[in-house]
Length: 317
Ligand code: NAD
Image (spheres, rainbow, N blue to C red):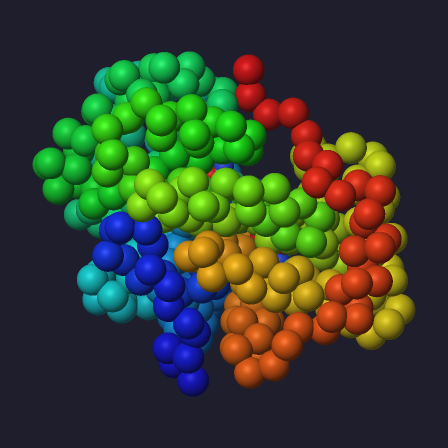
């Protein structure tokens, strides 16, 4: 069973990521409480089923996600060079700060919480909330120094509006930004990341697409209270979830399979907090390798979601 998950190259980094990535924001209890025991069992199952990529941030659960992920990784005990960890900087419970001084301090804090000597990918978190020119002129050069110091291996940027990525990538020397992380833009509801993929490929930048379930919209338990979608989008998703349930289909699995089909995206980062969720999401990928996705249900769900196709929400300043 182990390592049956497809590995995909991440841009020019040389890293090979499992096509299902482990989003650790739920380990910060942001979608409901998660005990340390549950987190450890979830991470152990992820390794057992071939997941090798884990993403967190000091922002998730106000540093709790990093602490719990670090503890779980240590407890499970897989050698450090057999998995890939990304964390972020610039976004904190207290607010945003992309200054060189803050992000330089941030890596040391994250490494301590994660109980690691280095992280593989260090990303500027939700840059649309900062000044993009500061990201280009101050934050990324600071991250390059951390790379030279061996504390991080690769540099990334994350955020919601897609225009931020080309703004930055057009203004930094080639090879400076290794990875972008986009979220909620490649799934059944919204596919707008697709238009940017040829550009990212031409730059050799690796692509991580997060939130295939649109942060809970495409789940039977529904989105958390803080979810920023409009009431119209939430209602349409609720209708799609109810439709699938009545038909005996799992909308989350369908959504995972939809997102996994595009191989120009290296990994689909899904937030997980239980052994069962790991099993379902990995099965979504392994079954897809053998057979086609459920085209009929997909077409029916797409029809329900048609009025809200590509609808997003404001983010940033
Ligand atoms: P998601 O779309 O992955 O949804 C997560 C929710 O779905 C959680 O409540 C989870 O428990 C539930 N879930 C997972 N698998 C399920 C299944 N098979 N059936 C039913 N429910 C299931 O949203 P997310 O967690 O926000 O995104 C994934 C990860 O991507 C995050 O944990 C984070 O690591 C990363 N991310 C980064 C950014 C950023 O950098 N700006 C933004 C969003 C997400």
